[in-house]
Structure formats: structure tokens, C-alpha cells
Image (cartoon, rainbow, N blue to C red; front, top):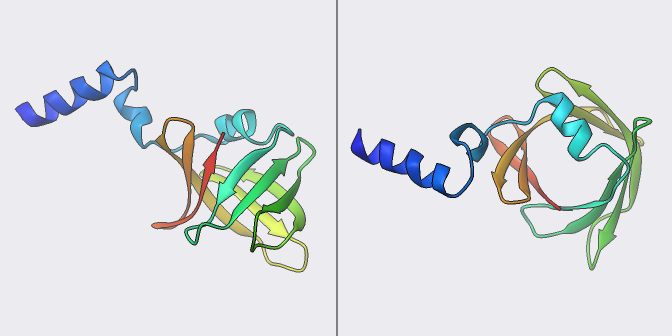
Length: 119
């Protein structure tokens, strides 16, 4: 119990509320933070990086940064647990977005990290 309290105190001292340490973003938070037309970086577990832009009109683009990766266009929607994307010629996939550090978020499909988003 003391270790738990010390851990919570340490997180709070760092300026991060315990619920924010690894909590999921709500659909509203996702839209305000990422789906606003401003670019951010996404990296796959294999370290392939992309410049991502989720426009407010429901469109999304990705452009590779460096070697590897494929340029793409698609659409996005929000759902009660997070968001879904559909790339041209592909089927929709849905994800949750978890805070995983300072200006760092994990894109989750089930228990698997699909990408890390940074700003």
C-alpha cells in the first residue's frame, strides 16, 4: 500500500494526474488534439515514420518521413472508444489512443501497439 501511495505521489509530483498517466483519450480529446488539420508524427513499431494530417472534414493523409512506408489517403471517424480509419482500397480499422508519456500517445488495436504518435 505504501508503494502504491508513493507511486501516486511521484506521478502527481511530476505534474501528471494518475488517470492521465496511461489513460485512454476520449473521442472529443482525440479530435481536439489530433484531428484538427495540424500535422504530427506517427511511428510504427518497426520505426517507420510518417507525417500524419487528420483534417476536420474526415479526411486523413500520411506521408513517409525517411525510408520505408507508403504515402496514403483515407478517411476517419470517431466512435465511443476512440477512432476508425479507412485507407483507400482497404477496410476500416478501429483503435484506442492511450497517453504514454509527455507528448506521446500509443495507438492501440486490442492489446497491440500499432503506432506511437508524437507532437
